[in-house]
Amino acid sequence: MEKNKRLDDIVAQAKKYQAEREQTYRERALKMYPWVCGRCSREFTNSNLQELTVHHRDHNHDNNPSDGSNWELLCIYCHDNEHSRYIEQVRYGGDATENQSGKATHNPFADLANLLDN
View 1 (cartoon, rainbow, N blue to C red):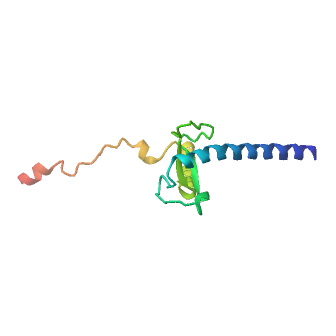
View 2 (cartoon, helix red, strand yellow; view 1 turned 180 degrees about the horizontal axis):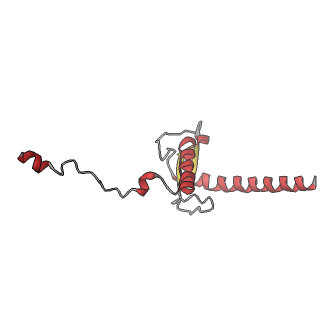
View 3 (cartoon, rainbow, N blue to C red; view 1 turned 45 degrees about the horizontal axis):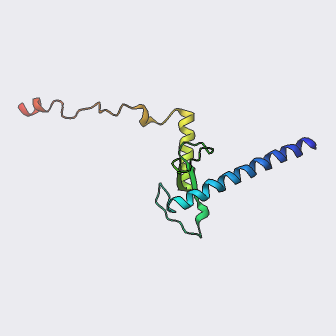
């Protein structure tokens, strides 16, 4: 019983600290930026503001510079998508487009001069 009580206290304390931290940077970000999702451009009002989240660009929730340079406002859907993409990048080492050199390997007009001469 004592073990469960201690675990419950630790979880409750962690949730309290997280709520305090989020309120601090969330309130600052909402004052700093327009209430628009940085990805899908959805606009927010007081009635649906709870669906607008603060995303940490470097994914470090403890990096909260006073100028807000590590934050962007995202709706809950875009925020979830951003974190899913980040998890995939960490797990699989990036997406397929990052591994390509970006140079074209096929030239459809390579033999055009010969074709026109014939």
